[in-house]
Every structure is written in C-alpha cells, then in structure tokens.
Length: 304
Image 1 (cartoon, rainbow, N blue to C red):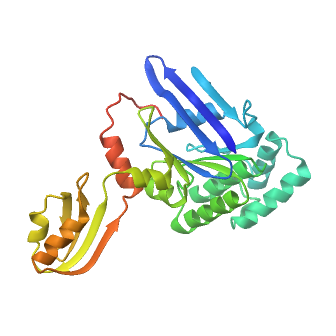
Image 2: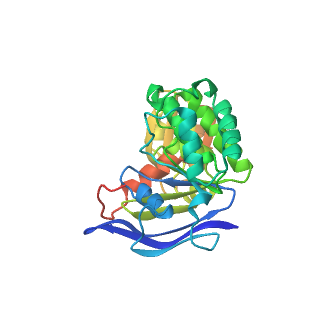
Image 3: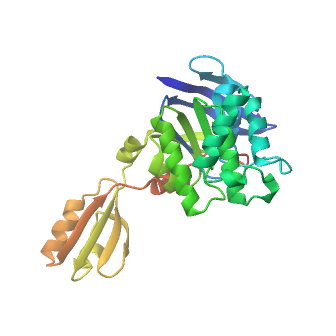
C-alpha cells in the first residue's frame, strides 16, 4: 500500500526554484532513502511533507488524503531542544503536543529512555547533556506518539559509532513493526545499508528513483576486482576498461559501457598471468551518486 505520494511538487524562493516537479511514492512499511548532496532540495521537500511550508504547485497525499500531522514524526537536521528544560519534562511536553495522554506518554518515555541507555539522565537539564545525548533525546521526541511515518533528516549526526549502531538497529526494528521511514542523508554508505528504495535529488530535480536493487542493476558501469601474479600488461592493453587503480598484484577496475569482463580474463590467461581472484562487483551507491550528480546539468543554488 502507498502511504505517501508526492505528485509534481515545486517550490520557489523568489526567482530560485528549490524543488522542481518532484514526484515519488513511499510504500507502507519500507525505508525510503531521500538522498542527494547538500543543497539538493531534500530538506525543502521534507518541510513541504510536514506542512512547515507549502508547495507552490503539485499535490502531497498521505494514505490518499491530506496529511494528518500527528501521524508523522520528524527529526530535523537542525536540532531544536529547550536547553533549560529537564529531560523528562521536555519529553512529556513534546508528547502532549502530539495529543498523548499523560499515562501513555510516561510509559513511552520510560521505555525509550531505557532503550537508549539514558534513564539516569531523565532529571538532568538538556544543556547538561552531550551533543550525542541531546541527539538521542531529539530522536525520542519523534517516536513517542508512535507515528505511521517517521522522517529522519541526518539521524546519525553527532553520534559516536556505538550509538550510531544503536539508532540504526532501532530504525530497522521500527520498520519490522510496520513503521514507514523516510531516511534523508548525503552519506551514501548509510543509505545503501538500510534503504529499500531511493530517490536521488540534485539541484531540486529528481535524478534517480526506484528500488535500490534495481537502481544498481540498471547502472551500466560495473567494477572488477582482480588479484594476480605476473605482468600487468593485460590491464594496460585492454580496450574493455574505463579506468583502473592498480596496487601491484591487486587491481580495481571499472568497465566501459558495454565492456566485457570475460575478455579481460581471457587476455590475462593468454599472457600467462596467474589469477588468484576475479570478482565482478556491483557499483556502490556512492559510485552511482558521484556519476549521476557529476553528469547532472540542471541549474541550482544553495537551498536545502
């Protein structure tokens, strides 16, 4: 079932088009990666989804209807917590803004403080917490009301590796329980590990959209990893290779469009090179990102 649908939404700031005819659909129970470089239009798109700003044109539908704000949890990239409030006090305040009953709110607060290993800090002021702990508190504020749609804009910012892994595990648990998640980031490695579908936006325009597995499959350039003993002449004289990085007895190479990896192997055998490893590797999301953004000729600016 489609939970969220954007149909040709656009947003201008004076004479600058920050988002230009963006369309996509988010399936219920999936993790949807909204990816792109800084200033691509990701945050502007999110702000239109949550009704912070309105699109100049186009439609946004949630379960086929107008969006109900209480069904969405939004973690913005630029954090905003009341520094003088106590942790428990702040979380209860945020829960009430989402129309939660006090008893349910307190139960959820207890659960999430324990889940994120910060129960001992519940009576501390926000300003006493580290940046990472504040990030955890902000994360909890997005979850307390059990939203159907969770929008996370750079959720790992300010977290050390241990807490990054903890938040990642929680995101996957939420997906398993049926929560739909929009994961917005410019860090391709993070998106590649957890997203089912992706949309790559650059300068306000959609560059790529679809299932991550299909995007990789349709990307025409593939890498070949070869470990070998012998001369590297088979690499240098090959007409199948776009570019390569040779470490002496190990080479990473990228095929030309239409290039045939088998012919490289045949040439190596013909040159009496001993092949210890020969692996065709699908492109990483980072490679697809660099290729797509590098060849994008649309105009743009510096709005997010």
